[in-house]
Length: 166
Image 1 (cartoon, rainbow, N blue to C red):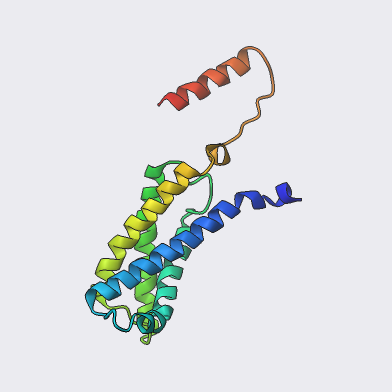
Image 2 (spheres, rainbow, N blue to C red):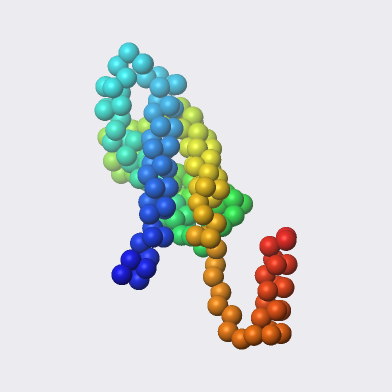
């Protein structure tokens, strides 16, 4: 049953999503503390801006999901991941602008966002780089069944080896 539902392919992506939520929240809090929040009331600031951190992280996770960043066949290389991550940031930024306009009580200052966005991008890119290198490459590899023997199978094997050498 486990192979039928492919749950074994979801658990690494669930771990990746949790790590990304933590990176996004840490980036936002870093932006807040570097711009104006004081460390004297550290836990009070963390609690006060927990809604904003949740909205911030949630918008980026939704944007990542919508662009296929949690699908194994869309993130096989770091260049593809970087492209998708850039578009994800653009979409998330638009979502955040909409949320800030529709819900004026949710406020993240522009100066904090100016720090949080680049930190978030670098953090997510780093997490995804580690994910690609620490995850079993067989997990991300496409599998092809070749039916036949002889000349056809040899041509496919030659083609596959040529693709790996690039």
